[in-house]
Each structure stands twice: as C-alpha cells, then as structure tokens.
Image (tube, rainbow, N blue to C red; front, side, top):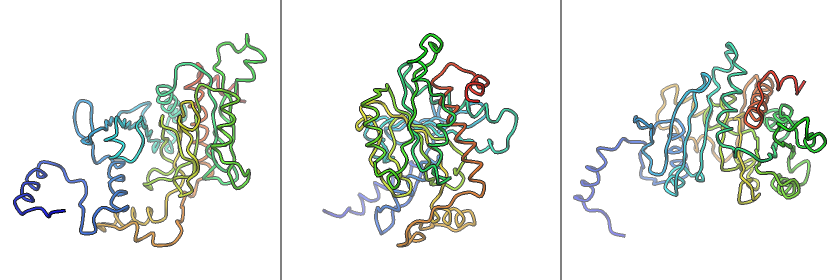
Length: 330
C-alpha cells in the first residue's frame, strides 16, 4: 500500500476543514477503545445536526429529540447498512426516555412516566395480535431484577380470554414468562422462550431486561426501547443467545433499564468531570474482571422503574387508564 503524498494529505485536510471533529485517530490507529469512544460520543448526542428534522450527520442514521409528558425522548433510526456500520447496532428504531426528573417526584411523576413509556412503546408494536412478555434476569439479584419485577405489574389476560371471552372481549391476549438465569435453571433464556413461542404462538415478544450503562448519569434514569430484539447479559460481558426475529420467528421488542455501570466507566466519568483530558478507559480497566457499580438506593429505584415498565406495557397493549390498571392489579 503506497503512502499518501504531501499534496494528497493537504487535499484531505482541506476537505476535512469543513467537517466537525468527533474524535482523533492517533498513532495507535483504530482499536476497540477508539470505537467505544465514538459510540460514547454518539450516545452523548454530540453528532446532532440542527435542522428541521434534527438529522444526524451520520449517513444512514436519523435522530430526533422531543419531549413527552415532560420527559425528554431521543429517537435514533438506523436506516441501512451504513448506519449499522457507524453505530454497531442492527437496523431499526431505538428510543431513550430520560426519567432523570422522575426522582424529583413532582406532580403526577409516575403517571406521566407510564404514559411516556407506553406511548412510545405503542408506536413500535403491531396494532393487533397477542403478546408474550418475557422478564429476563435474576430475581434474587436486585440490579438484575427489572424483568421479573416488571411482570408483577403486567396485566396477564390470555387465560381469561380463553375462559371468559365475553367478559374480556375488549382485552388483548397477553401472557408472561420469567426465564430465570442459566446458572439456576440450566436452560438458556433463548431456548426457553423459543419453545414457548412455538407453543403459544404470540404475534410478538416483549423482552424486559436490566442493562449496563455507558454513562453514570443514565443509571436508573432512562428506559430504553427498540424493535431489534436483545442479547441477554451482553452489557456485563456475559453474552447469551439473542432474542430477535431471526431466532424466534416473530417480532421482538426490547425494553431495558440501565441499573449498573462498569467501574472503569465510573472512574473515567469522574476524571473527565474533574478536567482530565484523554482518559483511557481501557487502561483504567486493565486486565482485571470488570466491577459493576450501582446506586445506593437501587432497591427502591428498581421497584419503581419496574412498575413504570409494567404499567407502560399495559398502556401500550390495553385500552385502559392508569386508575383501571390499579384496580385490576390490586
């Protein structure tokens, strides 16, 4: 491979002058750390382009910001292979609902959060058909219990429609399943869900899971939605088989709540906030196994956010007000 001439380098620099700098590629080239920095930059919303549609500068990616029920909502649509390559995620729609002010507990904070999550989720889902709601995670470990706990607030109706079709004619068929974890069941979540899908034959699967955050400020402060499925355990380096349309044969919608952050990410965030530049997160991580850090109030936060997710699913699937959900779930 021939080296660039000085004239060619000058031409490239001239072309680059009109483009905003996102990150610099140093003498070490493009490695995992640089890729992660680019991903973090994207998720930090540094690539937003001010326009009528607020389209990102990335080819194959469209991003919009809005507010719903007082909570900021970020939507990123990956439109084609260019967007997939840029963000490292499959083609589809991704929503982040920022619930930071939820913890201020202002007027109607819970109801507004439910409506925000439910409205965005409803826009993703098919307009009709039965749903299987899957709670991923370990119910015995609080930061991982979002999935199992959320199912406590989901209205389960499939059996009622079978037993009393007239009385529940206005309800959508919904079933639920707690997968547990491989260490206690000996069964991969994907295997269990695949068998259940074959038997129950839902029109869609909604998979709820706890996530690992790439930013400290997002821990227990956002709900993330997507229509591309989910890979359980991927956020903590414990990759399991994917749950998506390819593996299950039906559309899979992911609902996630970040509940932990990697200790190296935490340290990097603190150093950056203190004014340290060019923090090498991989060097902070070293060769040791990752520490996962969570909040002091994780028990209450997981309970509250799991309830928001469960009620949000009801809002998306059933034609009910929150007061009616309270009555049916009590």
